[in-house]
Length: 454
Image (cartoon, rainbow, N blue to C red):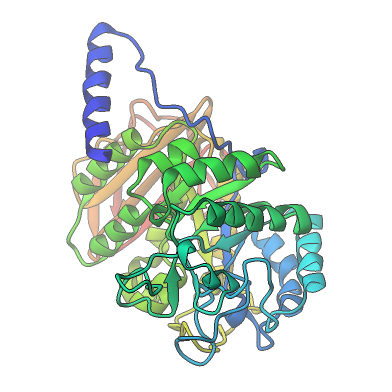
């Protein structure tokens, strides 16, 4: 589907360009970006591992710190009771939901969660819930209705695959189950005033369900909808505003070990510019809960390239993500099914200052906003080991230059269309760029030039 769509768009774009006309672009009509999310950065909260207590009340004390960091959207990993039947580990996976309208008693009470959302809102922060629609826990009350689940030839409920043995696979051919799922999602919006959802395994659920659910949910209030998927374009056409940029995550992993270069980057960026419907965009990240627990920390995977790849994630088209502990340079790989405290969260350091500055850069430069139509335009240069690109929205311009190797690189860039005065991200000082720019970059050195100071 995606490949066919890309071929059509490429041919159409070429035809319109030949005639000197502007091509029509796919329009996302069923999900709208709330205005408060225009320049937002997402912060993923691992409630269990965030504090020693692992509760909503304990996490709530961190809200002023996160407000100061500048993030806008708090994505809370699943907060529901965790099934005990077929549980993995001691505490189990938060993605094995025992009650879609319940709260994990380890985290607190309904009142505690309501207080957390209210406090977040008072600080200008929005709260989205991690929602698990593809599967439930084995002792979820819904399992009494076997027709609500996929079953084997003997009529026994089955898991989605041989690895996810702690969850039962929901069957979206059942209309009663669909109605119950939408009712449960609506409950959290109406009762707790949450601001959206991150949908786990979104592509495991039929697109027509998401269209149905989104239509009803958005009627309650404008919601931010994030899909854990990058393969099903129709999810963005019909329900979600953003999805996972796994392609970018895989690219930076490969770049860090010398398997990619500028040419590969530009090919990826060009392809993505055609595959995203108007007003939708990817979520860019270098780590999250899955990457940290199953693939290692960003430092394990990227090494010295971490700051440069974070800079790329913040200036590439899309919305950036910061995972719990990323803002303090966490180097601990967290256990997924057990209690495993993130160290040093309350102590600001140079990494905190770095991410605070990146978030500020995002907030102050419209060219790199999430709702920006500013395409990524490669900046011509004479060195394929140096990635350089710009994004321009009216008078606002942002130029990013990255040495994508662990050795010194020299490059001359053509700034014919970009010569202007810019603030340097590294120093905050103003620089006047001419029609060409020659740089000698240290290993993994990067620079961001922006019209507005971070």
